[in-house]
Length: 160
Image 1 (spheres, rainbow, N blue to C red):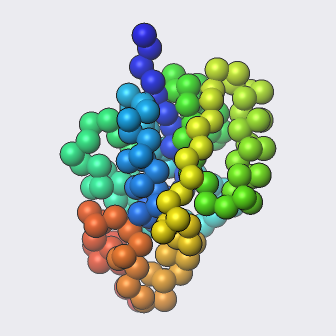
Image 2 (cartoon, one colour):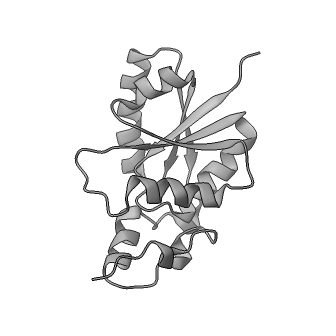
């Protein structure tokens, strides 16, 4: 039986407790979950790729089932490259579903063996987005309650 590998793609700028929850809840479903940090040409990252990778590695440092990698290009091609047959996504809202469904159907056309797996965000995490958390950080607020406990944002803070 082949290994069940899932790719959890995103920019993770920064990685939130919502992201952590989706991965933790998906772990019983897969043999390996690759948190894949993509380079989004439409977004200017606040944290560097290295910082984002380090943050996620800190969260899952005791778990060999979760890997962290970066990639460029199409997510579906990264999945094919890694032999992943599952694409993991978290859904907060109906709008998320409509957006993700269109992507999933396109991915399926490009890579028929790929199944998209959607997990609903826990209700207490519905309001958490990386964009909002980034704004809190950028404006000097305390965002620690919105990121996993293993992440010490002061190590990554920008000054000036």
